[in-house]
Amino acid sequence: MAVNTLTMTALVLIYLAATLIIGYLGYKKTKSSEDYLVAGRCSHPVIIALSYGATFISTSAIIGFGGQAANLGMSLIWLTVLNIGVGILLAFVLFGKKTREIGHRLSAVTFPDLMCKIYKSPVLQYIAGFIIVVSMPLYTAAILIGGARFIEPTLGIDYTTALILFAVITAGYVVFGGLIAVMYTDAFQGTIMLIGMTVLLALTLVAVGGWTTGATALTNMADLVPKALASQGMTGWTTMPELGSPIWFTVITTLVLGVGIGVLAQPQLVVRFMTAKDNKSLNRAILVGGPFILMMTGVAFTVGALSNVYFYQTSGKIAIDAAGGNVDAIMPLFINQAMPEIFVVIFMLTLLSAAMSTLSALYHAMGTALICDLWGRGKECALSLKAHQAGIVIMMVLSTILALLMPISIIARATVMFMGLCACAFLPAFAVGVYAKAPSTKAALYSMVTGAVVWFVWTAFFHAAEAKPLGLCQALFGKVTLLGAPWTAVDPIVIALPISLIVMVVMQVQAGKAQPAATAV
Amino acid sequence: MLFGIPDLQIVLGYGLSIGLALACIVYGWLYWNEGDGGNGS
Image (tube, rainbow over all chains, first blue to last red; front, side, top):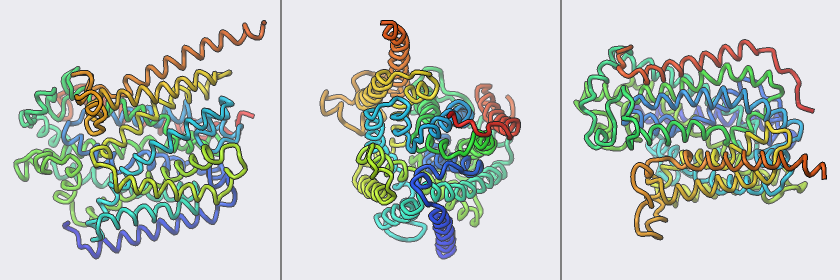
């Protein structure tokens, strides 16, 4: 690492101290269960926007997806279109306001609790809580590993210690300060991320000679696309992949649709809507949220793609070759080689902020799901602060163990898998629940279970990216996937979400027709 | 070729990203004071 270790360590320690102090302020403001679970339902619009954005954007969005843009090109910009259009505008305007109103009226405190109260079905709360408690630790483990990998060389401590320290420090302010502490620290971390990504874009454009010069140079590198990628449909870094090719399916179905739509029904993000005092707060949060996301994913994808120009001009290699074939190593390598020393420090703090803000939200969502929605559902104990604190500690320990034990090939897919599962299982029932006058419990139940089951089957038996590391199809049928191309590249969300949606809509319409008849009888 | 990018789909992607971010700013500004109360009760 180019940066003086002492400087880096000092700045990381100052950052951690500031985070803990802000977390402590959140703790001091936490007086009731409602404060702990939904931040007292009176969060400031800027805090809501930054917390939502910082929770949404994890290290993998910057490092992982930035690396993917370096490898696959600027076509990933379509994910930014969905991140802003769906993840902010649609989410806040169509779902956020209704979620806040209903959540306030029904006194819902978690996403499964909201579903239970809308549909008047404890079973739905159990199912949603179960999906969260089972799937979210995998995503959490991925964030933990990303953070520990950064802390290990930065502070010069071994990987296991780094992982445990990272988990314990983040859980510390979540356990004591609840959602107020989480959202306060998110806002602080979101601000650091915004500064870091803005400077990154400016310095990258300087490094490649400005936008048009850099983009033209990248366009002229099209004949350098590796043969393995070209044979699968990649045509260059400034052009879309060939329509219907394996790379087109990967970019469009997995990266753009999978992550772009998946964000709509993520429990830890839905809860942010319930922290707003009124719809005015959500309107104001949109103003900050849109530009924030543009500066996160838009910058990461642009910088990732343009890094090819820098590496080619300085070493004669494209980015993926310069990073030794490791997509996740491209962005850190580019930062270390192309940026001034002081920015390396700023960017490292940006990454730490991205990891901690997502991690704290996941701890809170998992812990409250375990206590409020599973163990203590319907009981007074579910509203006890101590019970929730215990729940967060239990889920933190489980996620840490998972991070230490799970194979990295599975963990690497965790972000996409989690978002896909959330969308397939929750989105249709959530959307109908907040809009229908008489939402059908049976429809929601069938839609949720169908979405989750079809998602799992397609993930384990058809989609090569997950089926291969999971190994279930290989063990049962002696082959990696049950179908060949192009199905192996079609993301589970493209199959499972429409099925879940059809089940929801058909059963909801049937229930609507049956209701007047039943009344007449 | 527009701004060094030969594919209009990529240019459109960038245009939409920036346009949607601006739409968020305009929406927040237009509805800055709308949405008091309304807790659905």
